[in-house]
Length: 320
Image 1 (cartoon, rainbow, N blue to C red):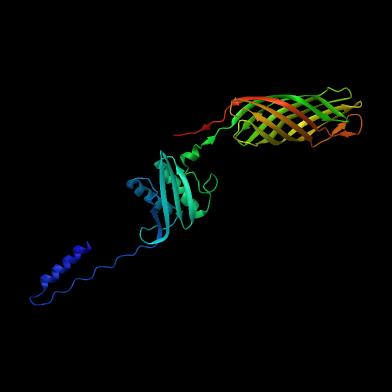
Image 2: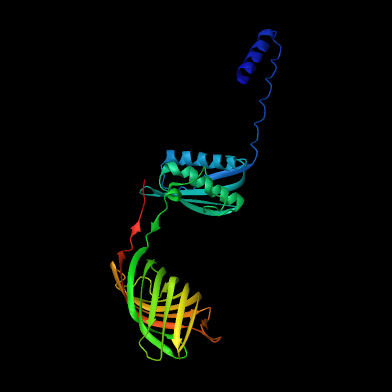
């Protein structure tokens, strides 16, 4: 439009000019407007594996993401420059963005998920919030498919029974059979064990006793996490009951108990397990005499053999 007006003015001047008179020069064009500095985004062509059309789309998406965080963007005058790359392998796209505020990486399971990934990464760069659920960079508008259906390693689920022999302290040690049953969730390195254990120490004539831990919660640590057989150790807590009889006196009590566990588990790569386990129970209470004011500390220990069965450890991947 400006060029048309300029041409019209020039033609009018020529039309009204007299022969022999000088022709006036056209007015100079207006100076080009300078773009205000803002955030620039550059795609690392040496690493990026998307097509040219996909790169153009991603470039625009990232600029829009910075604008959504109330930052000005530019394509020529740069106040901050961020380099992005998208490496595609199958359906998965590994995303990287690097600039003055730091570097962030993410993963998208499809091209459709790239806007959500970049939304989280840019918000994390600007605010410093971690890219985790509840960290501040993830909200209800940018949750990715991986986050809504996360990949997890399924834990081994084992039911087991154990039988052994143990002793409980009284005025003298009382001996007898120990048995129990429980449920164990195992990963490679750690395991959580919930069980019910009993000790019937009635194999001596001078003293006897009974202890129960109902239930018992133990955290276990495997020494060799990937081996077919491994030693393991653990600490636990339970609510228990103990009653002992010695020298014609009976003592009873109940309360919280601490547990020390050590063992050796076999056949860990199969759906059945065998283990040998030593349990030491340390009560946080004392058993009171039923007919006197004396007390006893009914600590106990048992060595047992166990047999477990369940599902093997598998990797469960959820894809849409």
